Amino acid sequence: MKLYTYPRSSASYRVRIALEWKGIAREDVPVDLASGEQLSPAYRAENPEARVPLLIDGDVRLTQALAILEYLEETRPDPPLLPPDAAGRARVRQLALIVVADTQPLQNTGPYEYLKDPLGLGDAERGRWYAHWVRRGLAAVEAHLADDPRTGHFCHGDAPTLADVCLVPQVANARRAGLDFARYPNVARVCDTAMALPAFERAAPEAQPGAPR
Amino acid sequence: MKLYTYPRSSASYRVRIALEWKGIAREDVPVDLASGEQLSPAYRAENPEARVPLLIDGDVRLTQALAILEYLEETRPDPPLLPPDAAGRARVRQLALIVVADTQPLQNTGPYEYLKDPLGLGDAERGRWYAHWVRRGLAAVEAHLADDPRTGHFCHGDAPTLADVCLVPQVANARRAGLDFARYPNVARVCDTAMALPAFERAAPEAQPGAPR
Image (cartoon, chains in turn cyan, red):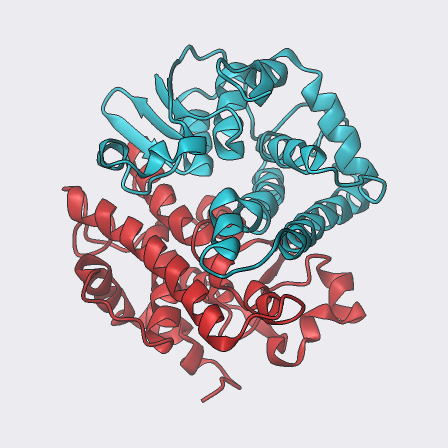
C-alpha cells in the first residue's frame, strides 16, 4: 500500500495507527502541508480534496481517514479494530465521530488559518476558538467513557478500537497545544494506555521521517 | 424506535432519510434547537453531547448520525444503503465523510454563532466563512462524481446510498443559503434525483411537524 501522509496530520496519524496495528506494510509518500504542497496541481491531480491521507491499495484509491479505516477493517479484519457486536460497533463509531466530525475539523489548520486570513482574527481569538471546540469534543467523549460500563482499559473494552485510533491523535494535538486534561481523566487514561503500545508509538508524528521537532 | 430530532438539523435529516428508506417506524421527540433546548440539563441527561439526532432502539442509545446510519445498515440491511463490494462501500463512505467531516461541521449553527459571539465577526464575514467551506466541500464531491465511472443516477450507481443520504441535507442547506450550483452539476443532478424519491421527500425539513416556514 502507498500512503500519502504528513507527520502532524492527525487524520494521517489515524491511518498509520491502523496500518501498524494490522501489520500492513506501506510505502509513505510525504506531502508537505507546512509548505502547502497539498494545494499544488500535481497533488490535486492525485486527490481533488487537496488533503491527506490518500491511500492507494492496488486499484483502490481512497481519501477520508474514517472511510480508509473501515476499508482496512473490511479487507484485513485481523487483528480487529471493531468489536464483534452491532451495538458495540455503533458505540465505537459514535466515539470516533465525536472526534472525526465534531472536533478535529474545527481545530484543523485550514479553518484556523482562514480565521486569520481573510477573516482577520488575532492569535488570542483563534486560540479561544481552538480550545473551545477541542474542550467541547473531549468533554463529550469523557462523558460517554465515564458513564458506560463498556469502557475498559481502552475506549471500548480492553483492546484498542477505531475509537482509540481517532482519539489518540486528537489528544496528541491538544497536549501539544497545552490543554489541561484534569477534566478528562478517562480520556487521558485510555490514551496513555494506547500510546504505550508499539503500533501507536510507531505511528506517532515524532516517529515519522522528516517530523518537525 | 425513538428519534430526538429537529426539522432543520441536517444530521437528523440524514437519519430520517435512512429510516424512511428502510421503512422503519419511529416516534419523533422534538428538540427545539432554535430556543437552545439541546443545552438544557434535561436534554443533556439524555445526550451529553447536547446535539441531535439521538436514536433509541430498545437498549441501544446512539448519537452521531453516521454511526446511526451504519448501525441501521447492519441491523436492518434491506433495502441497503451501502453497495455489496468493499471498494464501493469505501467510496460511498468517502463521499459521505466529505460532507460529514469536512463540510457540515464548519457551516453548522454552533460554529456560525460562535464566530459572532464571542469572536465578534459580522454577518458578511460569517457569510464568507459559510460559503467558503460549503463550496470547498461540494467541489470535492463534484470532482469525485465527475471523475468516476461508478457515478450513476445517484452518487454511486443507480440506487441511493449513504453518500446521497448525507449529500442531500447539505445541498438543501446550501440552496436555502442561496448558493449557486452551476459549478456542481453532478451534485445538483444526483440530489434532484434523490429528492424526488418519496423516502427523501418524507424526511425533508419542510415535511416535519412544526417545521419553520
